[in-house]
Image: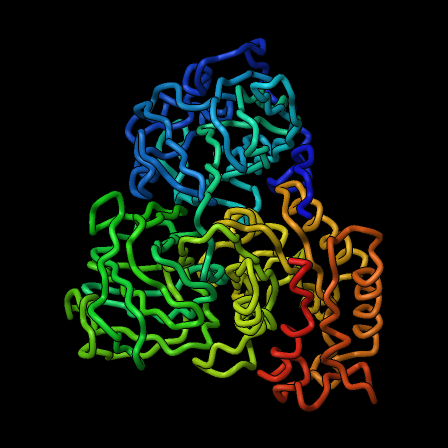
Length: 584
């Protein structure tokens, strides 16, 4: 049984607010659109910086930087599967509202409320209300980190300048997208904005994330250390993705998360893999709004149109992307455990090649591609985790990570759910391994900061299996903080009506960083997971099924990949076999 939707909760960045009083705003009232409520000019050109004053001190966002990122007036940007419209106002005109209890008419239904925000004069936090047509209401809480000093892990867009009263200066500025769950079975009538404390909370765009029906995720991957260096020009990438479930139609999701510039895809195709870079038949062209070419704004996503294409279950696909370029930086998932293929620069569009793909380079990461959907009404199980979920220690190009093994088990029963692997090697629950900027780390943003993008916005998501915490403990994070983080993950997932299955942390005695103190902390976290008093809907004891009975602090030798931390394919199979399919 899935959880009923709870009162909306904070899904923005939960950080301390600066003690700066927000500016006085107009009395709260109802507006027929967000644009009608705009009361602040926050965007100016470098040539006329005095035309805007975002923070009350004469500073503003750069119109030039926004346009360079693909966020020009009236542009649509998709973030966390939610399509938002950037203000149509020209630079120097009203373009945002300082949230102070205004009610905005917003009609429709969906799974989440999304707001593009930023804070000034400190992080701004406040509670608002979602008002339904049936007269019911739900509270939500939002934190808008400060546009200059705010955290990086939840940012949507970073720009290199801000305008001072005398012109542009090299200061990074940030925009954030914050979300709160809505009941998809009820119609939203309006949204009351928060009355913020700390700093000023500026709202630039608002939208509802549409509910998806008839689709499920057959493959996905998470953006981890964010940006791989190019430049790539006139090059084709051919990447391999192993499906979980099949379907008669498909679509792909492209992701420019953490990018600072738009990326143009000149042509994208999909095919079934034969061997290596060769396909079994001529690749099929994917379109975007009926067009072959699409540009992904910085920080945004795009979803292709539905394509009539029979996708087999438990089979490898080839998705080919032609990059006219130059592409300087592109989002990536670094631990592919999969051979993938690239043509040379200036080799042209080779997305339609069947057996003659000009493979000049083999690489091992996914870039720009973050998901493949198929037609299905069953839904998706998301595996949220670290390198053990990501598949470190599995067979290169062998597709024997535990989520792969789980997907094969699910194929034997009805309904058959898709499985989305959102593991990131090195990931932690409460500490970032990457701050959203190139070269800042390789373990992804913390699990709590990536839930909206990597779990709640996944197509057809119904259940999340959480296996996180070992990297926190190895880094010295106290177990009570890890436990609190797992509680928050469960609470937020339940707010979206999802089931939560928690997995115990597997043994790692013999790992080069192992200490008895870390082991004691692991035992404390596992004790909580096994007896959490209803925090989770179910528990799978990965620790119990993979440990050595003669020495429960270490992996069974037959399940050890050799480093005493990561299971091997046999260990991953044992983990998948331990999951009670009825709990999903």
